Image (cartoon, rainbow, N blue to C red; front, side, top):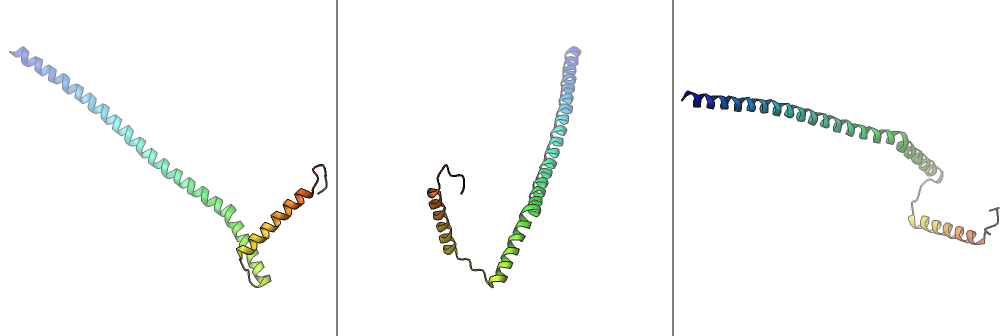
Length: 116
């Protein structure tokens, strides 16, 4: 009777030791996963800040100065003419006539002619 009771105690002991080993292993895996998740979050934040910084730098170095220059030129033009009229139909017709002139000039030029 004792041998069966001792066998069951021994089997319970083995099961508990295996359970404890699995518990420690799972705990280590969870800590690793949690650490990886934190690092991924931090790198995503850093990546977003890097992108925002790059766009801000590009805006301040390239776009803003050019827009200020264009605005300055328009202000100068307004001062000279008194008013800038933006009439797209007139601009379109000027552009079309310019393209037509280029086509006509292109037809008149000889391919072997070096002077334009």
